[in-house]
Structure formats: C-alpha cells, structure tokens
Image 1 (cartoon, helix red, strand yellow):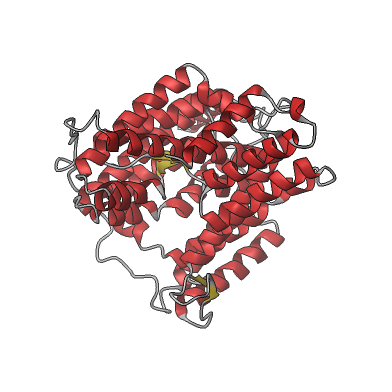
Image 2 (cartoon, rainbow, N blue to C red):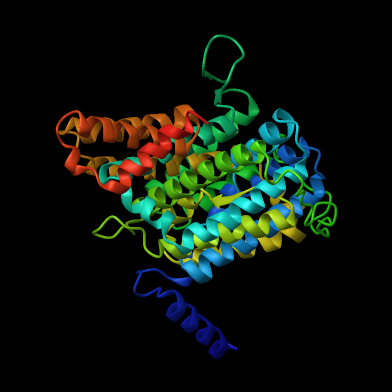
Length: 440
C-alpha cells in the first residue's frame, strides 16, 4: 500500500513537475480545495440567474458542475496551470437578462449563441489570435491587471458579505450595518484568516473558510443540511437544446459579438492577472502555455453550452488557490475533483455561506496588489493607462472594461506625445476593436 502511494506521488511529481515548481502534492491539493471553496457559490448563483430566463434550476446546477469539471480538468491536465473554470459571472447575466429578457429571445437562442462563441474561440485559438492579444498588452498594463483584479475580487467579497451595499438612493455605494449577522460574521472571518496568515499557518485561507462556516452555525447564518448525499438532477430538459432558425439574424450577430468580446477579454485579463501574481509571466511578458489555457476555455464553453449552461471562463477566484501555494495543474485537478464531489454532496458544499468565503476574497485582493510596486509611475504615458486599468475594473464591475480603458488610453497618450513607435501594431488593432465595441 505504501509503495502504491509513493508511486502515485512520484507520477504526480513527474507529470506536473512539482519539484521544478517548488511545490508539493499536499500544497497543490489544499490550494485546489481553497479555489473551490471561494468559487463554489457559482453552483447556486448560476442556476438562480439562468432560471430567471426560464431554465430548470436543478438541471442548470448539474450543467454548471459538469462544465466546471470538464473545463477545469482540461486546464489542469492539458494546460497544466492552477486555474479553475466555470460558467462566468457577468456572462450569465448577459445570457439571461440581455439576450432572453431584454432582447426577447428564448433561452435556447442564448445557448446557441454560447455554442457558436465556443466554436469561434476554438478557431481563434488554433490560429493564435487570442495568444497574440495577450502579447499585445503593454507590460505596465499587464501588471495593472493583477492589481485591478485584486480590487475587483475584494469588492466582490465585501459585497457578498453585505459589508458594502448598493442602496437605491443617490449614493453609489454605502457601508452596510456591520453589526448585522452576515457582515459581522465576514468581519470575524477576516480577522481569523488574517491572524492565520500573519502566523504563517499553512492552508490559512481554507482553514479560515471552515472556521467561519462553523461560527456561522450558532449565529443562524450557516444552515445545516438535512441530508449530506443526493443524486444530481437530470440535465435532459436543457441538454443540446439549440435553436438554429435565427442563426443569420442581426440579433444573433450582435449577441455573438458582445458575448465573444466579453469572454475574450475577461479570460485574457484573468489569465494575465493571476499569472502575474503567481510569478508565471516570462521575461517576454507571456503567460506560459497560454494557447492550451485558452483552448481549455474554448472547449469548456462549447461543451458547457451542450450541457445547458452559459459561457465558461477562467475564474478570478483561482487567485485564492495561487495565494495558498498552487503553482501547477494539480491545483486545477483538485478543484475539479471537488466539483465532482459537489455533484453528489451538494447539500454539504452549499451550506457554506457567502460570509465565510468573503474573507478569503478580500485577503486575496490584498495578495493581488503586489505588482503595483513594479509599475512605472514616472512616465505618465505608462502610469495613466495602468491607473485607469486598475480603477475601472472594480468601478465598472468588469475586467474587460478596465482593459478597454487601459489600452485605449495607452495608445492615445503614446500617439499624442510623439511616442507612437512604442506601440505595437497588434496593440493598435486591439484598441481599434475596443473603440468599435462602443458603436455596436
């Protein structure tokens, strides 16, 4: 038995190059579990959003888990990167509230759009178009992406915990009542997790989530499940439910272009930002195995739409696993295994309240801030685009919008300060596409 365990560990170390990346099987597994804990909310939130479009909640729950399992396994085994994937927030809202409710189409139309987007992404990845986009992002903007994502993640955590609110009055944001149970539990969790981090406790983020969840039981926030095991709902009501009669319509083109644009730059932004934080960016500013990562995303989106869910993308919460020490694809594989367990142990995983995962998101936001020290603030043609990238991500609630402001301002500042030669042809093309987006 001991020999078998050693043989398995040896295989994992060899396949994922754990020694070369200065990590261990235990660290990678804990990192994968941490990533899952911080993103498991998608198992509830995604079905909730898509059910507003008329889709079956239980079926979407299963489809969400299946899409996350397949795409994250691809990311781990094929791209060998510590990033997790699942149906993306923002993209699911566009699916339900814009394409279906706003434009008046069926959810089958929206699923068809997601399927076509996945096919297009596979083609664009095969021809290295998406990889070229990553290479076209200026170095200082790349570093700013990590910082902006950090603020974005922290903001999501604070919002999930109701520490920050969106009131209906004239105030854009407001502080919630921190003595209410949910925000109070989140603040307790931040303190506990912060102490664990300060004491250099291994697995601090994961331990913080578990302890905060337990504390939430007497506070009435953590609801104990009546059963631990249940069979996953069938996906038959939404499986392969495509609608082809509007495939050449103007509405299909607009929806497809918008979805393509959102997903492309959300995923590119997440890959660059988390890779920068993890120290994976090479001396040329490239993400390692970017093509494989982008292809995993594209295949995940295509298969996800077949299962019956919205567009798949790389999750920002992968940063929590990276912060916990994850450096290889074994982290992603561990996250995928957790999603497999969640299919059958959903009551157990779904009992974890948002207030328990919020502290990890807030503190991961802190970890993501470190590249700000490497941004050149002495040259305003570099500093202003970096700052706009950072500040617009949380304020616009979008990675892609932050990137839009960063790239366009970078090109304009360089052109009008006689530094146009510093801008690559690819960057000019990306900026032109960003501008075009505002007119469609």
